[in-house]
Length: 461
Image 1: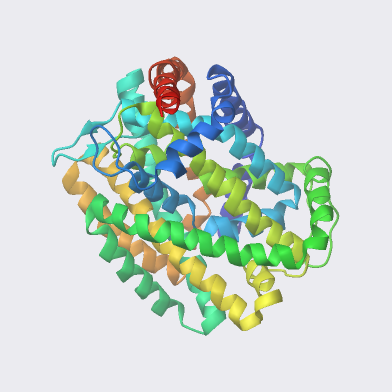
Image 2: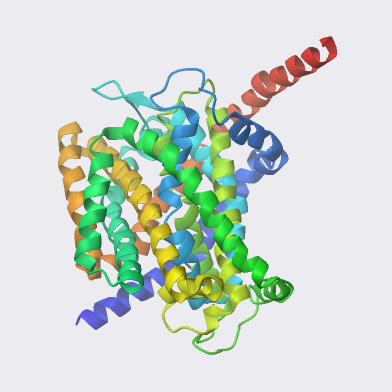
């Protein structure tokens, strides 16, 4: 019976992440892109100046965290096992073409994530302890007046945090077991205690921790994975040819790779791409709603940069590392593909240990922010006191996931993910006028004003 349930869940997941999500994520994101006149591409340079160029500056206006702390908190939830194991899983099941569809989701998703964060700031409010809170549940209810849809989103995300946390902790416990021989319960206990130490301090502690660790761990990972690509640089042209060719044509089986059709490339590329950068999910707006900012669109620029960094940089480097090294065709377990790629130049033992360490740091920051997201949904649905109860339930779920418990819940992850994406994307589409209006206001009264001031200052001195 469990096999039948598993098959049914897999079939439903495959269907949802086929034509329905293509229409909603790519179609919806493309519609928003047109509505804001390709803002994420035309103003990409400006977005870099306002994000990377202002990392150490405090924001203007009200907020609990600095813009950078809000960004790193949101990035921490996306820069996790999906960027490492998730990418190799997408390639293992969908072939090299899956990476192309991850890129497409990212480019179009920049508009969606920008819009989410903009609306998160516009419709945020203070809770009973004086902290700024916001997110899809608030802009759905306050912007559209559709409370049932807001409740659906909040409930879906509150539940989804548990299997997401379990998958993260299981990824690291299995990798550590393979690399060091540690029992999964020991790694699980360590992750649980370390995560608890962060999340029990609230959003301010999460912001301070992610601000220090996320940029460092991302740069180190990019350097180490980038070295693999350079080591196999002669294979790079052929890899790009595979990516573009098999985004639109099937690929035959080779070695441990069982082959994949276009539908599989599209399905796994989109699902892992959406789960990687969370564009269309609305979750980032929960963290960004706490930011100190003087305009909703200015904070939205961090969303554009986040998608670029998460998918177009981190996931691409991961994907190119496993494709150029050839390990994606030499393993029957997708979890072994990345460690094998690292082992190619660092040695099997050190390579496995490095991936385990990266996953440990990624997982700690990711799970901490995911728990915060889940808490905010519980607070919205049932009040602040219940959110504290959910915090401890989430912490316990980390340990359960690490030892491989309740695996049947994991099967529902992509379905629960759709339960979040659908109401959020519907809200973005119906609130497109608000996104367009705030974007135009930012261009006219902030961007052009600051540009004129900069020109005057340059001319004067």
